[in-house]
Image 1: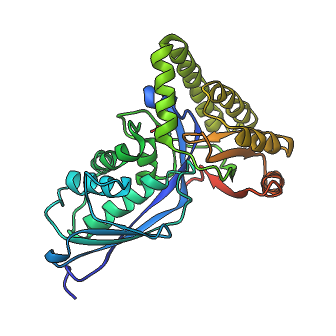
Image 2: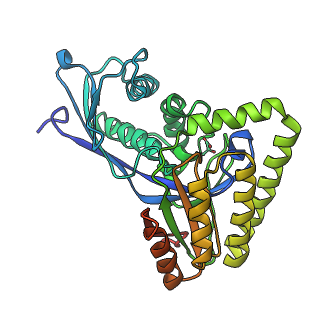
Length: 316
Ligand code: MEV
């Protein structure tokens, strides 16, 4: 089989932000971890008369790259193929997303990275992480307006990392792995909307918002120390503090607050929303497997989807 007929695959994972969302857009650090599930894409050259297409399941959509389209996926795909240098080629891409969209778990970044990797594989092209992120940002800008790049950095590299806008993701060596329970509020969230709301608040009151971002940065710095020293009690408290500041920025919701309260009552060391907020997911830190199962049960009994994930494991 010639390379043009072969289907090349690319994959990428989602992410959870442990500490620092929103403030990271304004140059403060964030700590985030990759999730094993994300997106997988397969690409192959198409006959020129068919042009380029992207089909995504289970969303049941197929788009052509089009910078003027109403569909944000079509506009994002156009931005990605142009930034990657494939605007003149005809490529057929089929992708599958394993994360709920609009839930704060980085599904759009995972999809973009998987698509880019699959197309690059068709052309036998290798790029380093910062080149991949640069192209991915063109895709993410369509969905998120002014992304910090944290979702893309985690989709590309995975693991547990320290991220500052414009800098490479720095891996964090956790003394002990972290057990997180992820709960989905089921309320669709738009990072573009909440990032826009935070930007408006900052325009109205720059001093107050910058002080909040600085307070979050201090929490993130202490959170890194807690992770490196294996002090999960301290980390849980820092997650709670971060949540109070996020609620003050009006990006939490009554449902997220209810889930966070239920997780704490079920024994979580700390809990907060994760990602853009305004709906989407929350995370809770558990001391051990039994505590994680308790927290998960509490969220499931509210009729929410929940799962347990372990982050910060050292590679063998
Ligand atoms: C979204 O996962 C995280 C935000 O901080 C936006 C961004 O960093 O691009 C809300």
